[in-house]
Image 1 (cartoon, rainbow, N blue to C red):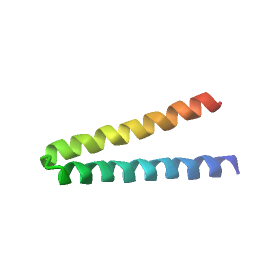
Image 2 (cartoon, helix red, strand yellow; image 1 turned 30 degrees about the vertical axis):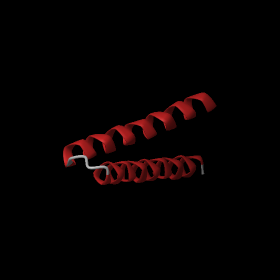
Image 3 (cartoon, rainbow, N blue to C red; image 1 turned 90 degrees about the vertical axis):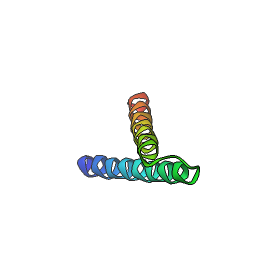
Image 4 (tube, rainbow, N blue to C red; image 1 turned 60 degrees about the vertical axis):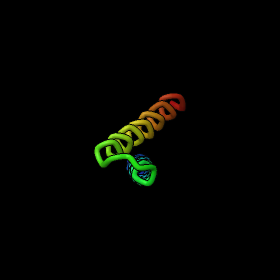
Length: 61
């Protein structure tokens, strides 16, 4: 059961990270950024969400 909880939590974190990256790229494009700049912003946002999830997990355990 513990493995299932970990897998579900991992999928949830990656889903939230992908949604945040997509939103960041969309907002960057609406603001007039070029495609490479929007992709860079999406990558930074994705990495930030994953890093935040790692930090929270480390603080809890």
